Length: 428
Ligand code: NAP
Ligand code: HSE
Image (cartoon, rainbow, N blue to C red; front, side, top):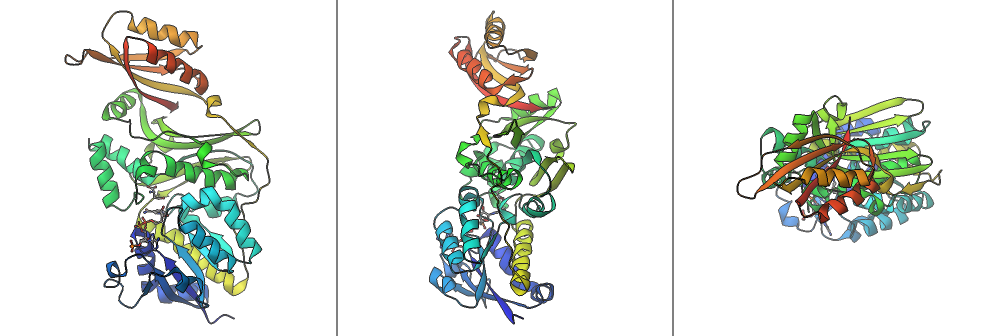
């Protein structure tokens, strides 16, 4: 039996500080759960002065080698974020047979298989529950409890920052910039929030989920990705009027042995469970051949919720050190082609600014018809006195994304169209 298990942290920022506090506060409870003592060893940071007043007895270091070469550290929790130097540090630790827990979706989406293989080769392990959905258990269920299922589809609100922002923009009429600032102040956003608002963070998480659900590597760079920066209160209000809410939705569907992946703001019918997921909450809906539909919902970002997932992984890793080793193995069972988003079929919401002249509607519906796209409904506002443009909102029947994109290209060339503001898919 092991006398103690040494734990070191890389990073003590938003999430790292919450993990550190919980490790210190809940020592007795964690020791009982593990069946041995969890001993806090080193905490790697860039600037020790920022941290050592709050955590007086903690051994902070700026030197990664202190962690790497510490014989008593068995579990390392990586909470620095970003690719560099996080990936290289994780790889070095795994090569030494250390067990890694990480919340880093950038690294796991791009190098998850490589790092898992490295872990297996060196008798180590890598756990990453906190990398998707913050505090929601989803990596564990996909890796174990749902493993017998053939998964057909994943639909998820998997970025807390953008969901929180869209909720504030609609419910409190807050500006985009103020909503982003509030998300940053609440500790939800990434250190550089570009990845959040552009949908890249959600694409990373979708790639991780696809790896586990479909047993394939999906390159996150190949996922069609549209962020929320073009969404205005007008869009949220039009959607509301039509019976929908707008959410940044990540979707992957398995059709004819091809996966279509897409991340974009989407109109979701108010009847759908995902439409009710507001604020920092995330939700992931899966369809499996045996289980049918399951939905996992909970806080998708925030230090405390995320620390729940991380500490669960730490305790599990420590128990495994005591009893045996296990990996969340990202087994590559399938050869599935990742299909182009051109094949993505949906109803669409299209908002345009048009010149207030006769024949505009006829010109646009002519273009739509040339591309075999059928219009289901139209809203047109009175022209704005100053700009002399009117808002035109079109709802289409189901259409293929490739056809919609080529129709939009033609619409953009139409003189009577001032601008194409938003094109968003709809879920009824
Ligand atoms: P953060 O507040 O920016 O903290 C990063 C920490 O890492 C800081 O303590 C920083 O040190 C340290 N660090 C960064 N680069 C370093 C380097 N090169 N050498 C040494 N230390 C370094 O980030 P966070 O919000 O806690 O996020 C951490 C990770 O959790 C990210 O992968 C993020 O995607 C993931 N995550 C976050 C959330 C959330 O709600 N925030 C939820 C799920 C997952 P200093 O403090 O000295 O600068
Ligand atoms: N920035 C991320 C989000 C943190 O807002 O969802 C959780 O992964």
